[in-house]
Amino acid sequence: MYNSRQRTGVANLPLHGGKVPPWLFDRMSRLAQEIVIVTVGEFGCEEMLRRLSDPYWFQGLGCVLGYDWHSSGVTTTVCGAIKEGLRGLENELGLYAAGGKGRASRRTPGEIENRGHLLTVDPSSLVYASRMSAKVDNSALQDGYQLYHHSFFFTRHGAWAVVQQGMNETTRYARRYHWLGESVSDFVSEPEAAICTQARGETLNLVASESARARDVMASVAAEEKPDSLVHELSRLKTLSLPRRPHISPEDIHPDRLRKIFVSAYERKPESFEALLALQGVGPKALRALSLIAELVYQTPVSLRDPASYSFAHGGKDGHPYPVDRKTYDHSIVFLTQALDKARIGDREKLDAFRRLKSWV
Image 1 (spheres, rainbow, N blue to C red):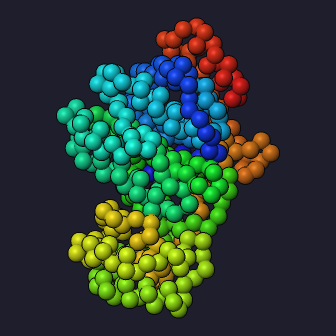
Image 2 (cartoon, one colour):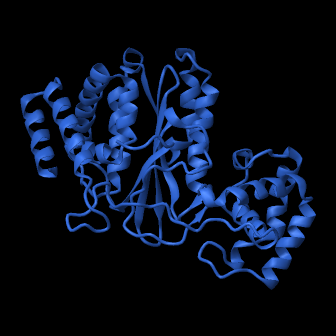
Image 3 (cartoon, one colour):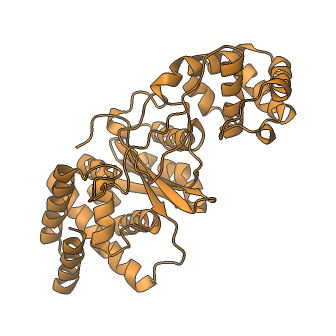
């Protein structure tokens, strides 16, 4: 359905207020449970992860469960319903869910480690995958969206997928990021296979292929340049030649405040950009500062290409911003229809779910 890249897609959705009423969430959890049981039983846990990482299928699942097709809440609610639906069945299915919205997202590492005795792999590798997927989308790809939701799905054999979402306070839109771990070999080079958004703009994209040389320079500068030299260089650039770009403004550059991070990086000597990104404390502002030095001092520009490629996971009927991918769309519908048909739920709930699917079609 998608080529074998690491991150499989991103969806942009308007922010909606309010909460899901308990009576609806209870039904969503039960229906999600049945769809997961059928999918895992028929196709295995790895296929379930592929489905969760597919923006088309995930969006369709939200519709079938009874949530607004274009609401940002579909992300948090569907992930929550799946996590609740898995409760008590994790060991039987071999599929686990961790994380969630807000504070729950910060409990992801602990939830993974607590299941370490049930896994055939070292849980630390899963904790690293969870942390790095969040760091990439929050810091290495600076598109204006601050993550507030992170759900991590994994199997007892170490396969994993991520569904996480960021919020843009200015535009009041949310952007959803999907990751699939089975093909991850490099967290910091072109990890996206597809990104959905309503608008594209200038983005500090440190994981673009065009940024490869800049990534090497940034890691080298952080490891080899003495912190005082970096602070001095930033102070000079700030007063002399700071470029006018959306991702960098004079207010962003505080050389003295960044000195502590530069000292940490200098002492740790990161051997690569991924190692630099993994360091505690290295976030968006430190990366912006290093990218500025790489560009203006070492003439290695970073990419400003927004990797977004389509909107709402389905495109538009009028062909804007791109034509609907009918083959993938239809495949998702067929898959969900078959899962519903085999689900062990009441006739009324099944009928309602089919009606929602028909409405989506």
